[in-house]
Image (cartoon, rainbow, N blue to C red):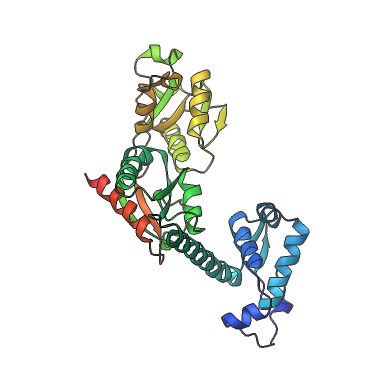
Length: 325
């Protein structure tokens, strides 16, 4: 959406009062953030539950107000210009402050112990987050804790969008690490799981050449665990599996593995928890194999320049302490 004509010589009042007097609305800021998140105007419109023509019209309104091009077309959609990125960065701060204001007012009104939103990859959620949450809930029964289990690609982007106070995971390769503060707190051992009675369990130690003949359940393409598994196949000179089911849901992964001959890579802490369960989900076994899957250590990650509220800092510190225990 490059509109050079918008870069007129007409003076623009870029003060806070001037911008909002000129008609800039919260819905305009939401649109810019949605475009940055999705890279397409149609996808941004869907995320905001508006039509694509309405989104395009709103974008034109913002560009006219600021007299600067905010988007540029690229092969796969659109990307923000330097002006758009500057607006998006400030917009995220605005929405973060509004969220924190609502949180503080609610805590004052209800007398609750505060609220925390945490995102985590699966392994550390089991061995670090759960024990820390138990301690916090016991000591501060009024606290409200929300936890989302996802892959790092999703979690870190949601951290930047102020949907989480902090996350436990890894910075994706395509993101600027200067946007974050992180403390490395542990390593995640990865293993392969299959159903009870799987044919490969009869082989003893399974080598890489035995694996491509079966269906696999992977995390979505581009995630760190997925790439680590693919790298392990390539390093062993083994072709990648022909049939792959993509899902980030551990529940769906377990269900598929339990009911088919599919193989899935998961964190060993999670596999041990499932395998020791007496329920049907416990009909999962760790596949003995000499496949070496290396994934880089995970960290406590916060957004740079964003202070943790007291309730989130409490949980953050407990998880950090748990990791060094």
